[in-house]
Each structure stands twice: as C-alpha cells, then as structure tokens.
Length: 239
Image 1: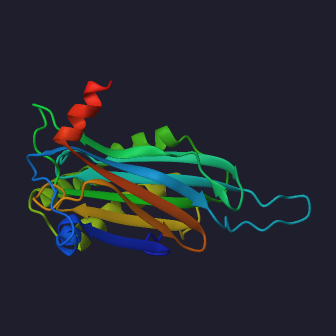
Image 2: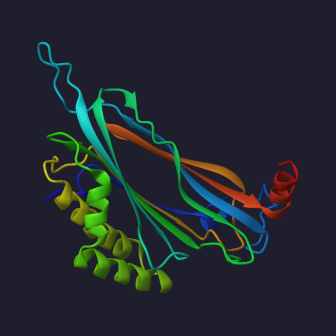
Image 3: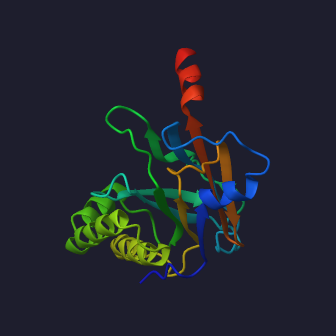
C-alpha cells in the first residue's frame, strides 16, 4: 500500500488573500466578468535523487511513474487522471512532461470561471519494469470504488468543502491507482497536493504566478496564468 502522506507537500493558494496583500500597489485586477482564461501548467518535474545506488557496472538508473489527478468545480462529473512512465531515470534528471494540467477559456458555452482547482501530482519509483499505464488508468476508472469516490468529490466541489476533506478523498483515488500498479515503493519520491482558490472572484492576480516546490528527492513546479478580456482580444487579433 502506497503511503501518499510520506514526502507530501500540501498548499492552498488563495488568490483573494494574495490580492488583498497587494491592493495598495495594484488597482488593475479584473472582476470575474473580465477574466477570459485560466491555465495551470506543470512547468517542471525533475528527479534529484532516484534512491537507486550506483554499484559496479550498474549505473543506478530508476523506473519512475508520474501520476496527476486534476479536478475543479467546473468538471464535477469526472476526475482527470493521467499516468506516465519513464525508464532509465538518473539523478538530477528533468522529465519531459511540460504540459497543461487545467485550461479554461471563456466562451458562450463556458462563461463562468472556476472558483477552485485541485491538483495532486506524485512521483513513484517502480521496483520492476513499466506496466501499461493506459491499461492501469482504464482499470482504475472501471473500479467501483473509483466511481463512488468520483461521485463524492462531485458533491463536495459543489458545496465548496474543506481543503482537508477533498484532499483525503483524492488520496483514496490515488491509492486505487497505486494498488493497480503493484511493485512500486510504498513511499513516493514526492507528492504535491495543490489547491488554487478564489480564482473567479473580484480579487484575481493577472498574468503568471509560479508555484515551485522541491524536497531532497524531486521537484514539481506549477505555473498558473490568469488572462483578462482585453489581452485575449489582442492575442486573438494577432493570430
């Protein structure tokens, strides 16, 4: 059983609080009606120490799984679950995983921005070779417990439940995936649970905000972008 509480970093990043602290020097923060786009990117995932000893002719390379679970109050019916595998990973190696974890653009069909986004990312060391990650994800989504937990999360997101309650259920979802993987170490190299809240209110911070974190084994960096209507019009006009 994987213990996702080991090597865990948790944070709730509240944009309302951030803007209140900066209100004395900035007056151009848009209201929710003026926000045109929100994107959360995984800007970096790297292995610092793969916990594999170099010995004789063996170079000390590791097999790594990278799991991402994303949910928001805009997508309450489904959990976005992604799993990747990497072979022959050395110490001080950056994984090729620069990607968008969450994206929302204001349209006629999706006029309301999210007020909360929750992301869990975990780097797991495998004791054996890689499994078929697509098959593992498919099996997890077909699991009855997974379906029940997804339903619970959908209800919780509608009622703006506590950070602790939501993270606890997400860890249970991750545990289902971990059990299907088998042959992985019971302590992840690094797990991040990150919540972004008050994104759709009147206190939003424009542009890019970086959220890096590093422990002794790995690093996981997120970047969040909040765009306003005027800039979006200018960008669209230049395409």
